[in-house]
Length: 186
Image 1 (cartoon, rainbow, N blue to C red):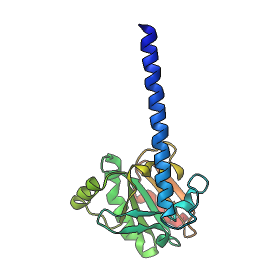
Image 2 (cartoon, helix red, strand yellow):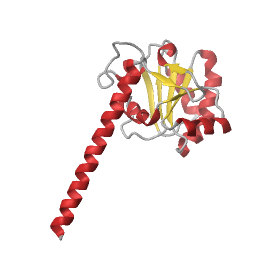
Image 3 (cartoon, helix red, strand yellow):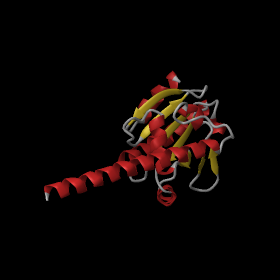
Image 4 (cartoon, rainbow, N blue to C red):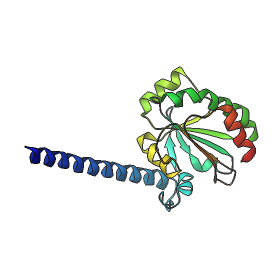
């Protein structure tokens, strides 16, 4: 009986590992597709994730497409979030205030939803924000990992300088006060 239990447990664990590996491969291919949508010779996400990000396009929950290339040359605050994530929801008013306060200095703010479009639409109908939202889907967690989010948790915020290079990263919720210090250092 013990042998059968161990055999079943081992088979289940192998199936789980295979499933996770397959899912990661699917996420990686989806990210490459997002980058390739920006041009025929899209950079490889694994070797140059920042260059690949600038080639990506994301559907917006209210329709249309968010083309990351159009934001290059301006400082950018990129926030990965989900409607199911309490710290994400808590920090959104500060992100919105940041977008309004520092937009006059050229800062752009983009929220990439690691979520489904229906949930995001419903949330934004109740609690609108002034900054752009793109639908990264659940592949967004893989994108955030490529941009330095080692744990893969949400929220995750990355700031880019005018040259398109990462200037700050933050795992976990942030505040307007903290983000304001990033402005002077970008």
